[in-house]
Length: 103
Image (tube, rainbow, N blue to C red):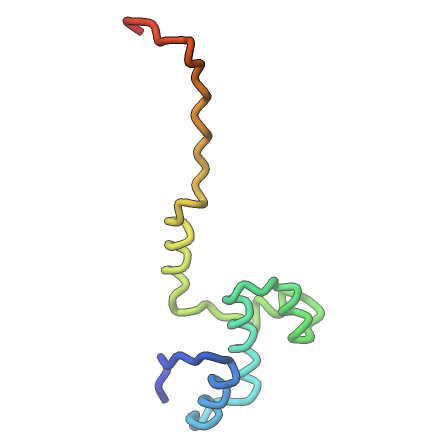
């Protein structure tokens, strides 16, 4: 089975897995994938918890979600994003005030 295939919809991914998978894959494994996809796509964990039917968000996070292969790259891209860097604005200069010579 091609493990690097990309799909436009989750339904297409599930159909592919169901058609191509052999041995060892259980229907319940799809729940793990689904939870991981939701969290990776930025769905708040409390909503994923409800969708999964878990009483505790920790169950969803600790048992059902898994680290995506590109996790390290995603973290690096997030911290490299200049929009996340706060630089205080320069104080406005009074146009009538000129800098003193020698300072």
